[in-house]
Length: 468
Image 1 (tube, rainbow, N blue to C red):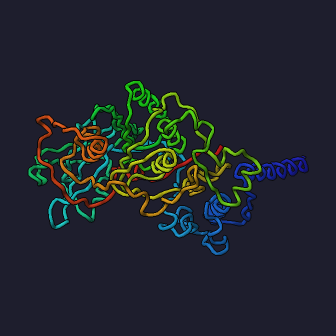
Image 2: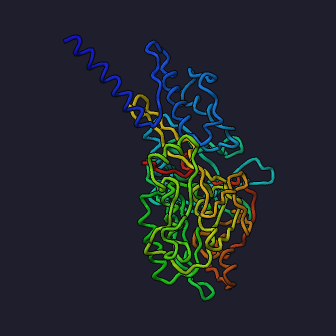
Image 3: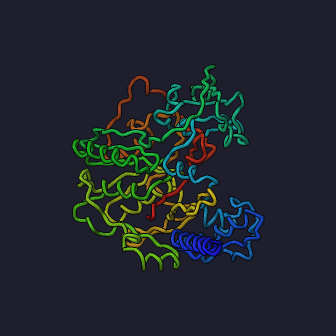
């Protein structure tokens, strides 16, 4: 009986090793049984899978030259190539569930995206002007909307030193203000709002505008989430039924998301879609190690994305207008790059973030650790091999604007600064604002080129795939 038990234990041991090897597609090294530091085993696994999947695996330090006793969430960053410069993007989370929630737009939030403005010429005190408020969020339920102004948080003045973290508390008192004759002024009102876990609805606004004999479709979209793909199809269906012949994609606040969802918008937008079905849209480049595995075990679809039929493709567009800012990143930039070989893409706003690489999630198949790794694993190029926007300069707009004109108008309003510029290029029409919109416009100084949320995870800039 002892011999049988011994044989069963040995068999189970080797079966577990074989299962881990197949699941992670690498040859793993079992940690010594005498290891007492739990970080060492976890860090060896991290180094092992990074050596296999990481796009810049040839630039990684060797295992022996690293400190495997470090905290794993710190150790991960020591492996990155030229961290914060070349690789500005890879990250690790202590919780796989938390990471997956982030990727799917689930976070604990108030539900606001802010632009920070200096309140006076000393550039010391700041005000938050709401760029948008998420549908169904505590902020929306409290009556907040785009253009509202926050002057204090928990009775603290907003400053250069605290504006990045002043919204971190679970419950917040927001002191509100008005913008009158070019000045930020307290209105004596405040709201107290508590964060909740919320599924982001990335569709901020969609509308159809009659303009200079044209029908203009406008879509403001904040994150590429597969759970809203059918909603996108429905919006484009309405555009198509209405005879939309100009399109404005507002990606000012969109930091990326699922590649398949950005491919969907490409398919819905591209000119002469029927003639492109089955032809190359974009392709992925992996490191040599993972490329060899895919070439042996997968099909060309692991590398190439082809155009697909989408019934609600607009069909006859000759051009598309994309509104951009420093937050426009990754999967948003991928749409721009996808379309450039096939139609005119007119960019209005500020330089995009500059991210032409993406990732997929790596976890331990044996569940020894709960870490979720999101390292950069591939680079993208369009149908003609272009991928030259992956720098801090990103894409440079055809028309440069800042989101610094106050008071803000609602997204989709023809008088809103960015949309108004796009419409003026299509053809001049004297827009007549209603009585509530006739206040003078003022340009004020932004404290940051990028908008930011009350939960920093919503500002993650990435595009990701499911390699399964």
